[in-house]
Each structure stands twice: as C-alpha cells, then as structure tokens.
Image: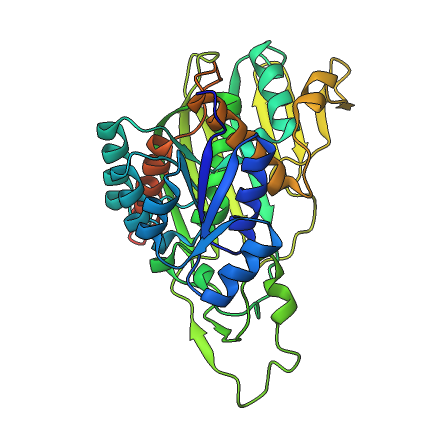
Length: 378
C-alpha cells in the first residue's frame, strides 16, 4: 500500500485527539472525525486540522472511505460502530474496553476474523520502556525460572471526580476495564501470553459522584470537581461498578516448568504507603519496576543480594515514540505497529481483538465474585 493510510476517528475527547496525533505520528492521513455534539466535533476538527467532521458515523464511513477506523469513545458505545466499520471493510483500532460484556466482545473478534480485517486493542502499557527491558531480562534467564509476579497499586483517586462513563458498567467504566487490562497486558508481555486460570473479587467502594456539566475531556475531569461538595443543589449519580479489585492468575511461561502465579491488587480509592510496583520473582533473582504501570526505574536483585538500578538500553530509548505522556507514547507505539502491518511490513505480534475479547470475558468472570468457599463452619 503505497498511498498514505486513511484514518477516520470516532470520539472527540482525550482519547480521540490522542489517537489522531498517534496515527499522524505513524505517517497516516487522518481524514475525518466523528462526535456526538456538532459544536464540539467541529471545534476539535478545526483545532487538529482534520478536514472532515460529522455526527453521523455511517455517513462518515461512506464519505471518507477510510482504511482504518479508530474507536475512542467509552466502551458502551463501541459495538455498533465497530460492526459497521468491519462490514465496510475497515481495519479497526479500539481503545479499551472492546465492549461492555465478554459475549459482545467475542462477537466483535469473530466478525473481524470472518471479514479478514486487522484489529488492534489498546491495552498498550506493555510498551512502557521498562516493561520491554524486563521482558528481555527474563528471556535471557537473568532471574532463572519465573515463579510469581506481584502487581500492587493504590491510586487514591478523588472521590468527587464528576460522574461519568467511568462510574457506569454499561458504559465501559470500572477499574478492571481501565486499569487491570493494562496490568494484565504488562505481565503477559513479560512472562508469557497464555493465561491458564483466574479468580478474583471486586468492590464498589465509591457509591456516588457529583453530576457536573461541561466535562468533555477525561484527562481534565479533576478540574471540574465542585468547590463545595456539600452544596445542597448538587445532583448525584450512583456508581455501579468496581473501584478496587484483587485478582489471582496463573500464566504459562516457556521459561518455567510450572505455571507462574500472579497477584493483581488495586485500591482505586485507597492511599499508598509505599511505591506502587510490579515485581517478577524467579528461581535465581528478581526484577522490581517502580510505578503502577511500570514507569520505572527498574531494579535487579544482584549476586550481592542488593537491589541495583539498571539503566534502559539505548535501543529501547531510541525506539520509544515521542509524546506528552505515557498514554500518548504507548498509543503511538501500538498504532505504529498496526499501520506498518496494514502496509504489509513485518511487525512483532501485538494485541488484537482476540485479547480484547479474552480480557472482557475474564472481567465478567472476576465481577461475578463467585469464587468464595464458605468456611464459617470450620
């Protein structure tokens, strides 16, 4: 494919604008953008110099004839436009979650497979530089056989962030959709992609959030927290999804004789006492990466039984896209892979709707909270 790849974006918020910039970074031509509100989509299109804007997705598909569509709306709005795009013959890049239920996500994957279109699923923090470094170290046998992984994070999110899609299960909200997917992608990238078993529990420990008008950009929602949370005129929305979770998993690793045990612990509203981290323990040594999404630094437990910080290899630094933040850089990394794949270039395996559907089915399983054994009689 010699001509520039044409891309149509759905979504005008933080993700939509980020996707547009990422596709341009990969050398694609962003030909159009679609949103719900006429004034907003027009404003964003002009700000980003996108020539076509609309509120009608199907008409935009016909008018723009894109090679790839980018889905950057909340998960509850993904299914129909993805189906329409696949039927139109487009390749699809979708932000997480792929859909709001495992069944619907599986249908999207099966449809894409049937139609022969390429897909990419944006649980993209596996492209953090220190994750790539950790993967190399594990593959080289630096820690021996991987035995277990520990993922601990406490975000201590503001309880009064304005009510929105992140508070609603039916819109793709919840910390499993918007945190766990990244963590699982990181761990499978380092240890092994095959997930053997999983169980877990969730808690909705928020309850409610204030309803505030004017929030169009997810990243800037903190700016809209009411100054007087006790104002009697405030309206409130009820949360119906998890803000904390605990998950246990077993992964198959080609480098280990036995399944690797993984703990994912996330307290969305709880204060941290020490650093969020991801640790990979092996039969000989261990790797510690600071940060909930492995932002670094990375430390190695050396032969002197001391934690030593390891610098990033220069080739990993050189291959990391530019970008304002981690989210933007990781979008750019994954989108670069997808665009090159569509062009027919050789690329490393990346996460597709197969993983998006699998993750959503796992989230359904975890949310059931039915793994408990009653021991009260013991």
